Length: 263
Image 1 (spheres, one colour):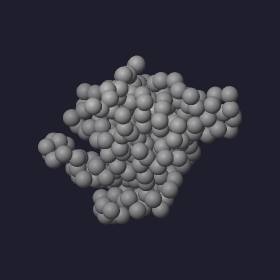
Image 2 (cartoon, one colour):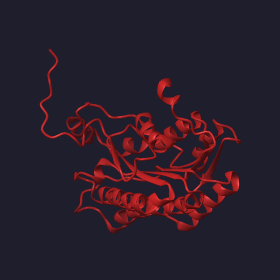
Image 3 (cartoon, rainbow, N blue to C red):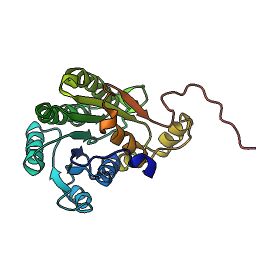
Image 4 (cartoon, one colour):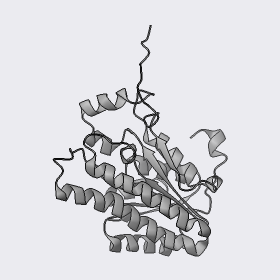
């Protein structure tokens, strides 16, 4: 993160919960927040991965927890553990999720339900549990992860796109209902980002088609996505709520594009 920007952001005294923090965007968010002074809870179903990230910052600053975001009891246990460890919860950046590339006609009920349970219901469970703590404090920042797939239609995105569209609607409702308590709620809509999940989901053909629709003609990085989450989690973003921020290299803005050929 550029020094002239990071100097303006100070998370000292703040406690942040990052779900899906063992890898990808979640790991990048945790790393940036830690560098800006936040105390961290890194929650993931990948226990070893979460512990490896937490060890980088030391036991006084970070702790790892195992969580199944699709299980309300597991989520409650997670937030209880945060309060037991740090006594407060200021920030939730909810990055935990799964993906699938499957055509609408081929998507099975089991695949559909799994995406809804983890990506949409998991967001609801984690955000609700965190918000209940934040309401008591009169302060909070909630950042959810939607996707450009939740804002634009695309082949192979029936279950994933529906779940991520639901995250957008949920986040807007949270923004409205939680505003009186000093809590903001915003969603990121990443496009094609070079994460472990995307590496599994995107075939060579998918990559070719995606890049053809991205004005910047490249995939983004977890760090680029994480910085936007960190801004929304900051005190400086206190008047930004109910927003869906695309992190997509211009994908959502693009229509017909004529590529300039190098001379």
